[in-house]
Image (cartoon, rainbow, N blue to C red; front, side, top):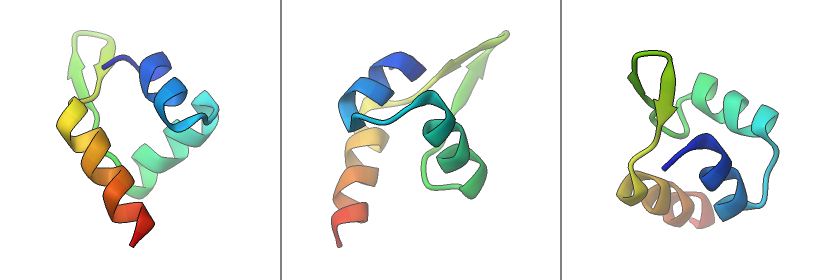
Amino acid sequence: MTPKEVCAFFNISLSTLHEWRKQGKIQAYYKGRRVYFKRAEVEASLVQAKQ
């Protein structure tokens, strides 16, 4: 998933997503200069946040 897709999924801003990455709440993967997120990990972080 791209950062924009993750932001739409959580209904958050890009700056909030950046903070979550810095805090380790969500893992980002890089391919060149592009940032991606694994859908399963994004969904797992949502479940973890609800607990």
